[in-house]
Length: 261
Ligand SMILES: C[S@@+](CC[C@H](N)C(=O)[O-])C[C@H]1O[C@@H](n2cnc3c(N)ncnc32)[C@H](O)[C@@H]1O
Image (cartoon, rainbow, N blue to C red; front, side):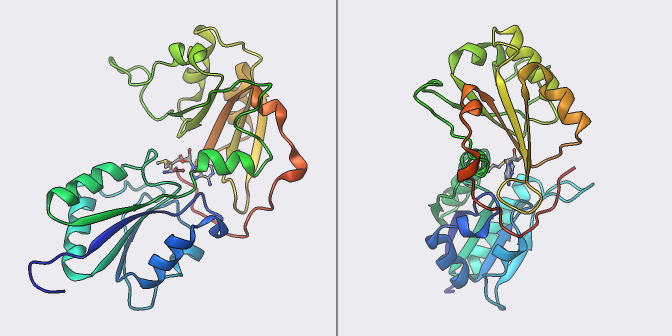
C-alpha cells in the first residue's frame, strides 16, 4: 500500500451458517482479501476460505466475554485498511440487518476509506425456510415485520412498540428475542394479538443441531425455558407458521457455530 492511501473495506454478509448460502461474490472476495475481521456467528468452514497469509482478527462475543466495543472495531478496520488493499469485515447474515454495518461504513467513509457492501442471506429468511416455513402466504396475510427483541422493554423510551406491532403487521420475525421473550409475548397479547397465534422458535438454523419448537403464542416463552433453547434463535409469530411444508426443507449443513450465552 502506498503511504496515505487506503484499501477498500468490504462489509460482507456471511449468511446464517450453512456455507452453501454464502454468495459467490463473498467467496471470491474472501479468497482474495489481505485481512479479515469477523465475529461469532460465522462458522470455521467459511473462515477457512481465506489464504494462509490473510491477517485475521476476531472481534465477536465468546461465552462469558463481551465483544470489542464498536469504537475499537472501527479503528481496527481503519488500521487494517492502511496496510491492505482489500479488508473484509465479515458479519453473520446480512451486514445491514441488525448488524451495525452502517455504523462501521459511515465511520470508515468519514475517515476517507472506501467501503463496499456485499449483502448476505439474512437468518430471518433462511432459518424458517430450513423448516419449510414460508414468511408470506396469500392465505395468511401479506405483511411481515423484521424486529429486534434485544431492547430492554422496561426502559423509559423503548424503541419497539410491541403493543402497536401486535396489530400493525400480519406476522413478526424476531431476532435476538429469547432473553425478553416472556415480556414480548405478554405485550403482544396485551396489544390484541390472539394468544393462540401460531409461533415458532428456531435455534442454530441451517447448521448442525438446528431445532425448532412450535407453540401457541401464550405458551411460547415457557416452552422455550422448558426445552432450554438458546441463542442464536429466530422467532416467527403469525399464521404463516401453520403453512409449513416440512418436506421441502433443505438438509442443514454439517458445521457448528458457538452457542452464545
Ligand atoms: C446481531 S443479530 C445479526 C443478524 C444478521 N445480521 C442477519 O442478517 O441474520 C444476531 C441474531 O440473528 C439471529 N441468527 C443469526 N444466525 C442464526 C441462526 N443460524 N439460527 C437462528 N438465528 C440466527 C439470532 O436471532 C441472533 O441472535
